[in-house]
Length: 237
View 1 (cartoon, rainbow, N blue to C red):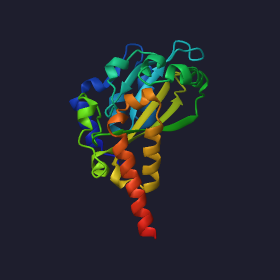
View 2: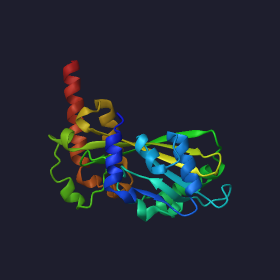
View 3: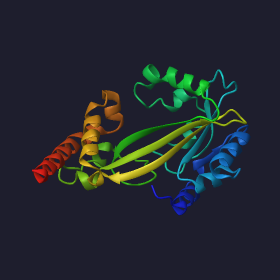
View 4: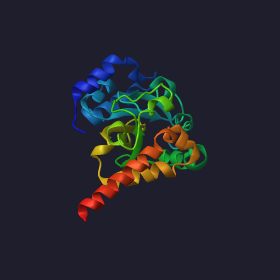
């Protein structure tokens, strides 16, 4: 997304609990800020870049467990930073269905063996009900998506993407996790991508299907994607 320093600064000014550095994490926070933005203040660094910044440390980096010890999070996706501070990876990801059984050991191993100088990236996605950069819904999901229909899904549903990166901080041995947010109405994404999104929502496991509130919009989303595809085929013919 186009960088907007005002939006970043305004988010942190309005929500000061979006920046937390636990006692003992000051050195890692300074190193993270210096690495990504050339300043040793984590809050200032997070205003200079689009990504939110999370620092995870372990008493023994080669053994773990890694805990969230410092962070500057301006644009969270349905999670509150104060609730995650000091927690190990397992607890941080507890709401994600299947994490403990399928992903936890692999993620822990990745953190322990990550080498300085390497940067790894991945993407995460959600279908959400608005384009707010801070997405923290507290209403009932049934009400949140009650207005969504096949006809208005392109304007009333949004694709929220997270570009995530992981790297080792060479001086302190901490791991820096960054999250960059981009949001687009589904009406602006390609037919091919829309079809992939609709199918991915349908194929979510039962637990994740419910956690992402998919039962309240999946039908309308699939119907909208099918209509878009048919309209494109008709134009091509």
